[in-house]
Length: 149
Image (cartoon, rainbow, N blue to C red; front, top):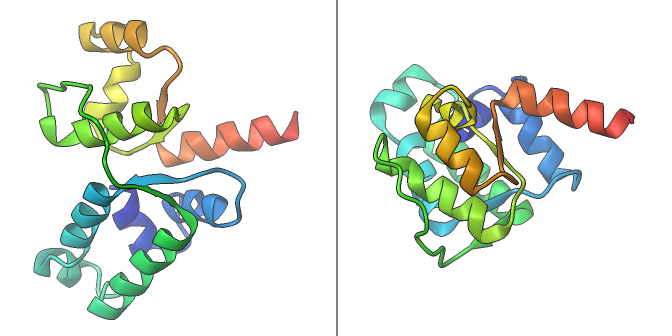
């Protein structure tokens, strides 16, 4: 999860992606449902044990910060079915609803939708050719390349 990595490691690529949004270089869109999921994940005892920097206070401050610079969308229509992992549908639905061109994720179920060798990738690309799904490192490279041109 990009938000977990961004909150747990302020020097990592996920945090760098969030800083781009915070500085207004890109727009981060997030739904109320995703914010709730992020809060749930970041406050799980197992996660907080693994990442000691994720205290109740730091998680709350992180989510408040993200909410300030992100476009928070309340009602996102359901448009995509992802049988491989239905929990990821909310990210794709938000991407479609906001007209976003890029979804940044480390989730292989989402990243595989860019693989033209996979049937689900072919179907996704045919239906949503305007959407690119990238991991944080690839997104940072693409952003850097785009801004240098």
